[in-house]
Image 1 (cartoon, helix red, strand yellow):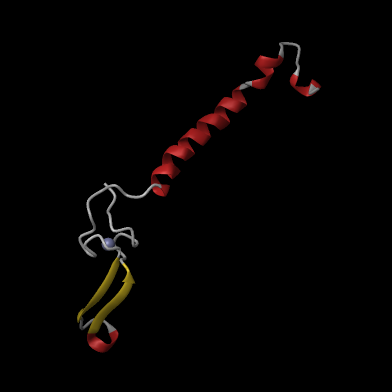
Image 2 (cartoon, rainbow, N blue to C red):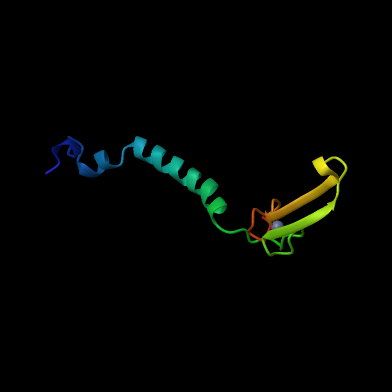
Length: 86
Ligand SMILES: [Zn+2]
């Protein structure tokens, strides 16, 4: 079948060497780091867009070209999710 897996110590010792556990540990760490980023935020509603995820802002701002701050579309504070991360 798979003779390379069958060593002199038996199949199970060969199937789960230290390297596998190292790789497994790395995968667990990656999952812990990545999964919370994939899940939607569960924190309080965004204060900038009031939870809608989109903004329509316009107010005088001398530092901007034209003298106005204008922003329409995805809320930059919550990336359009409407909620903040805890
Ligand atoms: Zn927002």
